[in-house]
Amino acid sequence: MIKFNEPLYTEQGVTYIVDAIKVKKRTNGDGEYTNKCNKWIETNFCSQKVLLTTSCTHALEMAALLIEIKEGDEIIMPSYTFVSTANAFVLRGAVIVFVDIRTDTMNMDEKLIEEAITDKTKAIVPVHYAGVSCEMDKIMDIARKYQLYVIEDAAQGVMSKYKDRFLGTIGDIGCFSFHETKNYTMGEGGAVLIKNPDFVERAEIIREKGTNRNLFFRGMVDKYSWVDIGSSYLPSDLNAAYLYAQLEEATEINNSRLSAWNTHYALLKDLENRGNIKLPVIPEKCTHNAHMFYIKTENLEVRTKLIKHLKDNGISAVFHYIPLHSSVAGRKYGRFHGVDKHTTKESERILRLPMYHGITEVSLRRVAETIYGFY
Image 1 (spheres, rainbow, N blue to C red):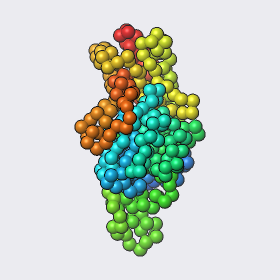
Image 2: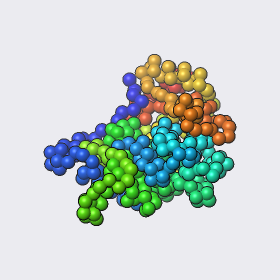
Image 3: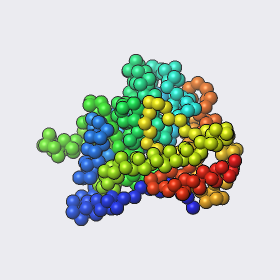
């Protein structure tokens, strides 16, 4: 059986976990390995401030708190995304305004954002699907024009770039995921990246249950107390220890995934030339991280048959999101602005193929041969 995903494993990660338990004797939040991860991301991605979190969902929730979302505020985002992108803002009382996507990258169509803005709009949330950047220059221009915040959902975008800037560092706040399905994993986890210096101190407070505990440990206050709203968004240092070993090998892991992605692409290119499928598009301005490899079939019926064909041949392949605007909660807490010209149609065509660090060329060739056999 060729699995769809295998979580990234390193021996060094286990060594660091043991070190945290036996030597450092610190397994709760903000231990040595958490701080090492924060500093690694800050240094390598040129981010002003990074804080590991328990998930990307919680990073997004922190972002909603930091920009002070209140009842009735409107947030613009694509409908083709994971539920956490919307939930984080709905929890604060916001109304989600969905816009259509581009067919090439599956990202929010930047040309449709401006007409969706009202006097209630508070933020734009671009989602970098498959680690391929949205058109960030245009989005940032719109945000500046209307004085809106930009919160990057870069859950899938660790190591990806737009021009020469890492995803997650372009908007006011960026959010990463280190879930086991991502390129780098701590099992469950994420990070919030803060560009706006005005948010840094409050982010630490929100992440520490609304207390100024970090200021106390730095000797900036003589005792710590409850000073703001917040929650417990700190991951265990055991999770951070596992992640840090991968960050130390981030370039090698990234290159390995890119090699597999390129092999997928080369093996399936002839099927695209024949008109059977469509392959992913990487715009010239974007440097992607090979987070996933997908193909697009002609329609939902063909995709369903191909998934079964692959499964019958011992290959796990899956589709992705059901557009949020078509869900029960999406209709309750949001609205689709304009016409759903592409979101639903394109979402029904996507088929995600096995893609993970360490997948062999033999497996990649078997996947391709099975797809050719179907057609």
